Length: 178
Image 1 (cartoon, one colour):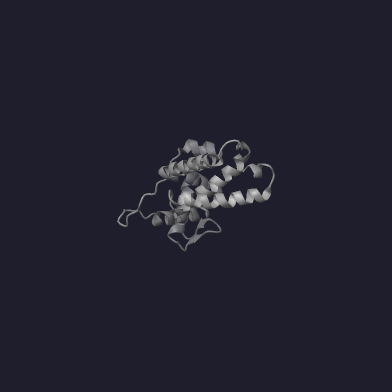
Image 2 (cartoon, one colour; image 1 turned 90 degrees about the vertical axis):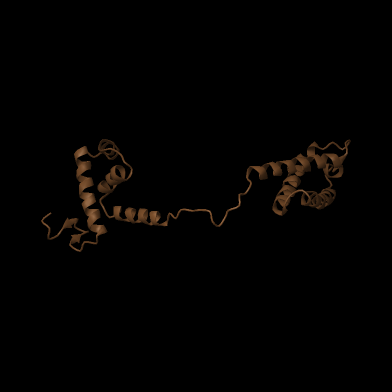
């Protein structure tokens, strides 16, 4: 390390190779495979970052061992925080597929309404907002909010029922007198 601090790149390369082998053995006995590899790399980076702090008058072995030990403690601490739980095959799990499909279907139907109708239906009927809140959020009067909800719901019923007498492009009910 003293030679590496003096600028000898070959000495630093050899030092890193020797440390790499020693750290593989050190962590291989203390940590599982992937964690041992992570700890080895973290330690090599720490040694590289702190190489200027090494004092050549002091022994190198204990300096490196202390860094390796602290990195080992860090990895053990991290592993205990993120301990994996085993999942059992008989663990009950809810199927949310139908709910997701329903939400997509409703969203697709709402896209077929005018933006004014879709926004107030989302606010009042889906999110539970009051008529006054929807009025304030959309800039529509309370009366217009009610009209847009009524007309939008009628249009949704027709779309959902695939009513052939409904004209989507004109937005009118044919043959009904509406």
